[in-house]
Length: 83
Image 1 (cartoon, rainbow, N blue to C red):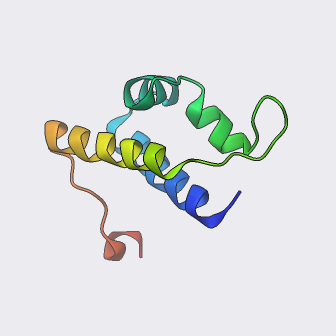
Image 2 (image 1 turned 45 degrees about the vertical axis):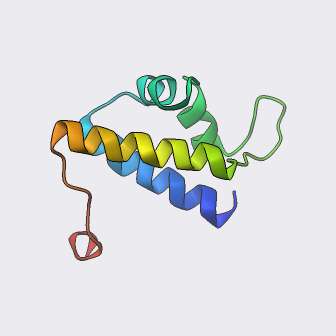
Protein backbone atom coordinates (compact mmCIF):
# COMPACT_ATOMS: atom_id res chain seq x y z
CA UNK A 1 0.00 0.00 0.00
CA UNK A 2 1.41 3.37 -0.95
CA UNK A 3 1.82 6.13 1.64
CA UNK A 4 -1.10 8.21 0.32
CA UNK A 5 -3.47 5.26 0.63
CA UNK A 6 -2.12 4.40 4.09
CA UNK A 7 -2.60 8.02 5.18
CA UNK A 8 -6.17 8.00 3.85
CA UNK A 9 -6.91 4.75 5.70
CA UNK A 10 -5.58 6.31 8.92
CA UNK A 11 -7.96 9.25 8.44
CA UNK A 12 -10.88 6.91 7.78
CA UNK A 13 -10.08 4.75 10.83
CA UNK A 14 -9.98 7.85 13.06
CA UNK A 15 -13.30 9.02 11.67
CA UNK A 16 -14.90 5.62 12.21
CA UNK A 17 -13.67 5.58 15.80
CA UNK A 18 -14.91 9.12 16.47
CA UNK A 19 -18.36 8.55 15.00
CA UNK A 20 -18.83 4.84 15.70
CA UNK A 21 -19.94 4.52 12.06
CA UNK A 22 -19.58 1.04 10.62
CA UNK A 23 -17.00 0.59 7.87
CA UNK A 24 -19.54 -0.73 5.37
CA UNK A 25 -21.97 2.12 6.03
CA UNK A 26 -19.14 4.63 5.62
CA UNK A 27 -18.05 3.20 2.28
CA UNK A 28 -21.60 2.99 0.97
CA UNK A 29 -22.50 6.54 2.01
CA UNK A 30 -19.21 8.12 0.96
CA UNK A 31 -18.63 6.54 -2.45
CA UNK A 32 -21.23 3.83 -2.96
CA UNK A 33 -18.88 0.93 -2.10
CA UNK A 34 -19.64 -0.95 1.10
CA UNK A 35 -16.46 -3.04 0.72
CA UNK A 36 -14.14 -0.05 0.49
CA UNK A 37 -12.76 -0.12 4.05
CA UNK A 38 -12.40 -3.91 4.08
CA UNK A 39 -10.35 -3.75 0.89
CA UNK A 40 -8.26 -0.84 2.13
CA UNK A 41 -7.52 -2.70 5.35
CA UNK A 42 -6.56 -5.84 3.42
CA UNK A 43 -4.47 -3.82 0.99
CA UNK A 44 -5.68 -5.89 -1.96
CA UNK A 45 -8.60 -6.15 -4.35
CA UNK A 46 -10.62 -9.37 -4.77
CA UNK A 47 -8.35 -10.12 -7.76
CA UNK A 48 -5.31 -9.95 -5.46
CA UNK A 49 -4.02 -6.66 -6.84
CA UNK A 50 -2.79 -3.84 -4.62
CA UNK A 51 -5.35 -1.22 -3.68
CA UNK A 52 -4.89 2.16 -5.28
CA UNK A 53 -7.30 4.97 -4.42
CA UNK A 54 -7.73 7.46 -7.24
CA UNK A 55 -7.26 11.12 -6.29
CA UNK A 56 -10.90 11.95 -7.08
CA UNK A 57 -12.10 9.09 -4.86
CA UNK A 58 -9.81 10.21 -2.03
CA UNK A 59 -11.23 13.72 -2.40
CA UNK A 60 -14.79 12.37 -2.17
CA UNK A 61 -13.92 10.38 0.95
CA UNK A 62 -12.28 13.34 2.65
CA UNK A 63 -15.17 15.60 1.68
CA UNK A 64 -17.65 13.12 3.14
CA UNK A 65 -15.64 12.97 6.39
CA UNK A 66 -15.51 16.76 6.58
CA UNK A 67 -19.25 17.15 5.95
CA UNK A 68 -20.14 14.45 8.48
CA UNK A 69 -17.92 16.02 11.14
CA UNK A 70 -19.65 19.35 10.60
CA UNK A 71 -23.07 17.70 10.71
CA UNK A 72 -22.20 15.73 13.85
CA UNK A 73 -20.16 18.55 15.43
CA UNK A 74 -17.16 16.23 15.74
CA UNK A 75 -13.82 18.00 15.92
CA UNK A 76 -11.11 16.73 13.60
CA UNK A 77 -8.12 15.36 15.51
CA UNK A 78 -5.14 17.71 15.73
CA UNK A 79 -1.49 16.67 15.55
CA UNK A 80 -0.98 17.49 19.23
CA UNK A 81 -3.95 15.22 20.12
CA UNK A 82 -2.04 12.22 18.77
CA UNK A 83 0.96 12.81 21.05
